Length: 319
Image 1 (tube, rainbow, N blue to C red):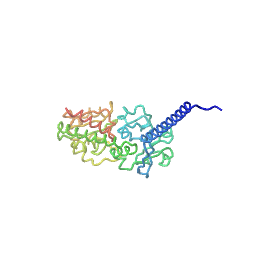
Image 2 (cartoon, rainbow, N blue to C red):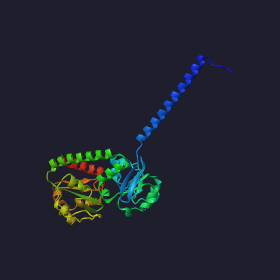
Image 3 (cartoon, rainbow, N blue to C red):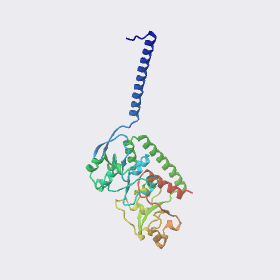
Image 4 (tube, rainbow, N blue to C red):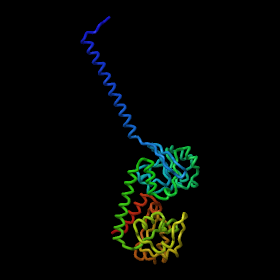
């Protein structure tokens, strides 16, 4: 049998003690790493929707929210698919969404499955979708907006912020928007005073005068405080369907400024140019008719749409 000398025994004990310390430090490091990972990982959120409570998974990444992409993008979130009707999309969002694949507006289930979403966000009108709420729930957690959220882009941003752990971001972008409105309101007041504005969407050879609460008109009249022409006031509140207006009726439009929302080459623009009736309205006589070649944000609601409307007004009217 071999015996260790005192010197050798001391060396062995020292090495054993060192290994124990190293092992303990390694475990502490792993524990700390695990704790840090848990701290940075998001947590589930339960939120009340039109169809009851929905639990939103932590750190969702693949979101489909057709026609509500404006609110997602405002929070810095890109959806996995974007709303479309055939090849038609929300053009004003294309700078951010040009590489995102389209999904049909009524959400066919096979198309939804192709994108493998981990969250679906639907508007309040479930009848407009091809599948039922139960069908979509089988694919991914599905939140259906209550009417007051579906119809209010500010509330959408707040709800999406809560869903996605971006409540601070939601507060930030909404505050920045209010500041933008205040600055633009002052500039426009100094520039055009109490003059009035009307907006007409030109599609083909049809003309649609925006009521005071429809899409961008709400920004113009309610938020920026610009005067409503009497004829627009007489239209009352907007209805779901757009109703074209005749050229004869347009002759009653006593607006100081008119914005024509029309893609380049629309037939209606040529019709107006050749119409003696149109040329006799105050805005045309003062050469204060402006053609806006991207109608998409004027005919939509959302933070980004509203920002673009404000920018277009200021760029056009503030000298």
